[in-house]
Image (cartoon, rainbow, N blue to C red; front, side, top):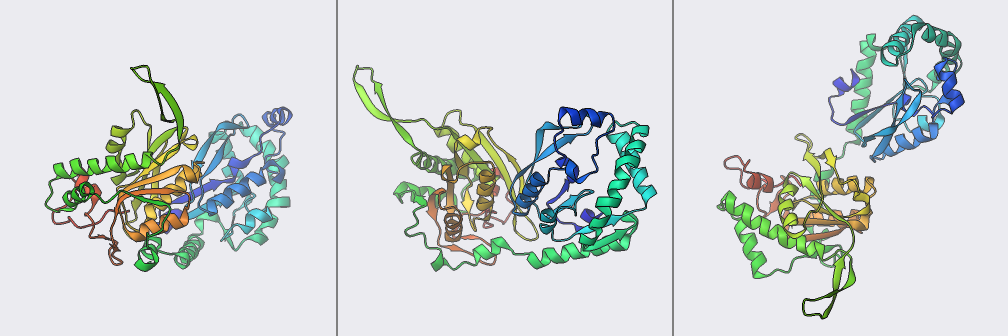
Length: 431
């Protein structure tokens, strides 16, 4: 109900039930005889719980353990979860541990009649956890009820809000919704617009050691002239932008580490050269980054390519992470991260953050783009000093009112994929 009333994206619900400690063989045997106390504070792994909540609050990726109540054990699987606008943590001992409580911005104790708690417990354990009713009732009298009186009920004093009657108390639910909404509004900072307002003289690319620009040859200028022309057909736009992508990819590959290698030529002579011995993969930021995959595949044979979907929120214009699929050995690879345009750099910043959360070393990331604004390059190199950036050209301006790269080339994704509305040639990419 609270989630529905908030009406905000990216809400994570974290259940304390995921953090039961693994049981020893003796404890497991007792659990199957309904003799193990799952309702005691010692049954939970508070260190793992604290570390998980702390990372979520920092916006980092976490792996949530999955507990199987039918076998009374943790499975070997985990659920990958990213930080969110709102994290709702629920559990019977949610307000018990002081370290965990100190992480919370709002603490709520939901109270209910004892008979209601028993009925809910009976229904849940029988229908969801394959328990027999007699065992559930016996365990309730032996462990659950005493634990509530001795440990859970006293945590009520740690709560900011106490809700009697649970979901039936609609007024209290509305109050919580209003309080959460107020906190979100107070903390709200439009990240993308703040980046755009950075004065150009503070975003100079001169002396930027993270940035590698393609030499401004007549060929590069000619390719840009074609793809920037609003009269260029979609067929020509695709062809010439892919040519430019290939040049950017080749420049990016030159930044990878090569080892000395000697080969024997057909004449019997020996040539001393270089060989790429490190693992390399590509990751495209959808959707415009997908257009650069063709250029990458033309240069690198059988290279694994992952994808990450980051879209702009239609109301706030903030980047939102939706989806990520990466090669399984990405943490051991050099990653060519691709996006066609970089305006503020907000989407690229988020994509790099996701890669770092997947244990990719920062100095193993090479960001490839066709066109950028100074603000985007400045933001990327300032936030991630070890990430190298390869770009064919940097335009002088980023409009602070509409976030357009100027003079720019329009919305790259729309022009490339043919989704461009009539008369909308000059709308910029959402990077």
